[in-house]
Image (cartoon, rainbow, N blue to C red):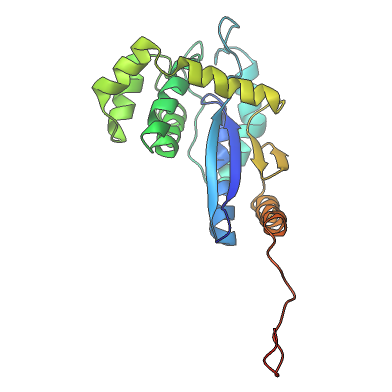
Length: 220
């Protein structure tokens, strides 16, 4: 059996385009069928101590009106510029992601983070908020809180950030489909083609032989 096509997607919880990339990703995977393995990867747009953005300043409302809201309407996604000011640092939330991933709830955790920030205006920089959200998706709240308080997953998060640097990720979302790189919210057709091309390349490398046949004399 062929190995699943692997997709890595780098994102940040304060990036609206990362949330908007979920729909095209799910649509493309559903359309192509077969095994596809998605791994969400962390990327901090504004790591501490770099100042984070403030929604009351001109930049965020401008980019939302010009790009985020039009794309959200086309995709049918309910999304709103959060009023949290300044926007939270996401390192702690990403440490929580490592805990969730270890408990096979990484994707559910990411989805909950996006919705908490962009639909519910929750501050993802607060440990109490993160603990409550983790509990909603079935994680043990006490274990999750202890892991964040103790920095249990800090080194793993930093290792993931080094991987982003090694791939020269400079904006999110950035997707790696096999060896095919896509930057920005992908079009479903674009992503379908990338998955199929990656699958074909993978089958070639695994020695899957196409064009072979058997004759009427029984020879193969």
